[in-house]
Image (cartoon, rainbow, N blue to C red; front, side, top):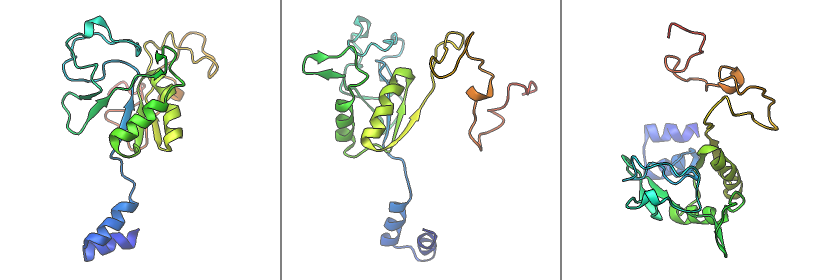
Length: 191
């Protein structure tokens, strides 16, 4: 790999550059999976969240673009929202967690490739997004989300008697190299 980089630096040519870039892992196609109805679509600002109701659109959504198969994301280029309802031969499913096959094929068809990264949004999105990367053999990232740390108890994973202590290190991990002027321990009261 280093010899390719040296060749590009000393005597650049298209073949060497193509070989080098073919071996460098790059992320181009990112999928953010969210079972919620509104996710930064154009013309939905101010409308209520659907609260995970993937089986139908709210009457309040009339006049928005949230029911389009492929929609633009506000303030972005090269980003779209692909909406795939979870359904079987009888229609849209209310119990949809295990029904991700349609989503996998629609994502691959729309991207004309496998995604490089699948990011899950919300806890119910994490459940489905943990199945998709296995099927598509891609990298998964999950975003932790909860409405109230006082009510969240992590049943079966961690015994909590009165909610999560958000200051406990096991729930507050910062990646190495993070900007310590932004991410710092709560004990540093001067920041």
